[in-house]
Length: 387
Image 1: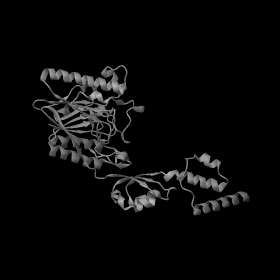
Image 2: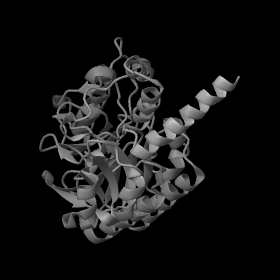
Image 3: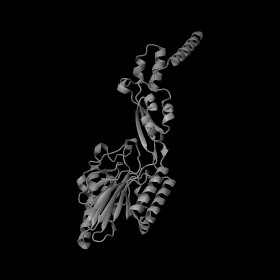
Image 4: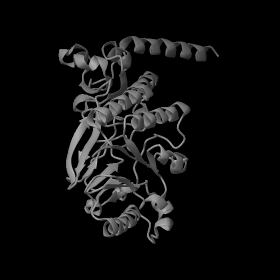
């Protein structure tokens, strides 16, 4: 039996102002191809299938189409809610969806109600833990001191008790737990929403050590925390900090002995990301950067002064530059000053004007700009003298 671990689809998300619905449609095409070509029996989505609690109509249509295509390809779907999802809205019609092979786990009451996948010798029980907001989940889970660890521990304890009861009644089974959380040891990216301040949202890794496999969601980089605890990561990069990450999921294979193997599945994005850094003239001339001409780019210019029409010039070679930053090489501009500090050091009206121009655009006034300031200041003085 084969299960495909995915998470953090974030359908409806944009990337620095660029809509990603087309890229997300491409990813779903690749996922469905994987289901067919690898004989996947179940697709797991460990939270954040949507990017927002109230997704747009076209985003809902995309998920609707995706679920239909996955089930038509021969796999069931187990989907738990994440911190970006509205659990109540996502869980609508869950009893009806189960008849079509789509199992939604968005309610605390369903934490210990697994989807049991039949496998001769050792069936696979998949438990979906929806995102647990401590203050909201504490009462339902019987927790006195609400925090991410206590509510997660209470949810896991419910699952352990259900596994124990099933094995006593029916014999051994393999257990898969889906959870949307930040587990200790995970490496984060810039595109994730913090679950708590100061790292208090982390739960210890050994909380999941009793299970055959734990399919985590929330962190966007695919990573292995232990042999049986992994993040699938997001299927697409959602920040430039993910530019070097291989995106995809994990393919799990179970046999009568339990978890037999785990292998990565990679789905290349149509447009790659490039992070460039250097002086403007060097970036525009460097032949080794030709691949970045068709990529979404984040460019940091290190010129000692901000070049004029910087974005316009950068886009002559890298037309899809989405982020432009400035970091003068060697700290050539010195420590940052407020405009009030600059103003206090001004020696005359021309110095005030030039200082303001440099402050707002991080580039000194050119000679022709200084000449224009002088001309304007002379006309102002003449007008004041004529009064």
